[in-house]
Image (tube, rainbow, N blue to C red):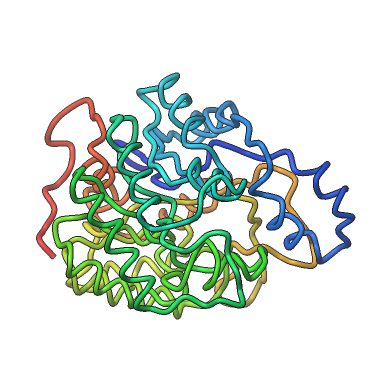
Amino acid sequence: MKLGRFVVDTHVHAQRFAAGAALREKQAQPGQEWEALSSVLGALEPYDNSERLLYDMECYGVDMCVLLPAFGMSNELNARIVEAHPDRFVAVCNAHEYLERVRKGEEEWSIEGVCAELDRLLATGRYVGIGEGSPYMPFPPNPREPVSQETATRNMLRIMEVAARHGVPVQLHTGCPMGYGPTTYSTGALGGFNLNPLWAHDLAAAFPDVPLVLNHGGVQGWWSEKLQEDCLHVAAAHSNVYLECGLWWAELYERALADPNIGPEKLLWATDWGASMPFHYQPGRYPPVYPVQIRSQGVVHHQVDYWGWSLRELQRLRIPQDDLNLILGGNAARIYRLPVKHTRLFRPPVPR
């Protein structure tokens, strides 16, 4: 039995990289593979991995997915996957092609260039939002040149302006996978908002009509609940802030559902399907299972099964099915304007 009427994973990577040759060239030793992979991702050519994705969708009863480009993944390839399966996929966009020109020395990075690229992509009508995360950080990243909160916020406000013009949601990355090198965190592509979700208060207040989605809801891959608490703080304070929750264990859902200013209306099932992040099992401890990149084990070489674990955690929740339907797809259908077969499938959201 499907877990909901209309099941949508709003954080999926349908592209993958064949990184073996590049890692062999780097001669990465055990424990160093993540840094090596981080250094070559921008130059790798992604391939279409949607056959495996469609297989898992059939296995687990997932109706639609929102495709995200990340770490060198192509907007154009995602758009082609959507065009091949318009009833199964939609895609958000990032500034990948512009950043590629910057990486090759053809242009110099500026927030104006980023916004012009996002504006161009959204004007095509092929994309339903901005993500994964938002490209507000100077490129290429330099860990010796930290970016201030003021600069990061001003850059993000420019991106929010683009989203407001096109009437689409914006995604902001929160959480730490633990594997990739330091240039993915505060000074790199993910930026200062990644470890400081409370900064998002200013964005939500400045653009109350733009849906702001906090990728991973503070839990991308680790056992700590600190960043989730920060994300809950932002979501509870603003009606336009939503939290991805697909990598949460059951107890984390309970905290959000119990908050009268959050509830099921603010949660989006989103698992990071397609990412290279296994699950760690620690029997007798809390949480007994959680997703994390384990540095000593190196890069994952198989297709990790996110949905099986995530859906089992959701099954532990003793909540009304109408609430679960909102988390699994109803909220996504509203925010990303997804096609559904019938009206009145979902309980109208309670204003939060």
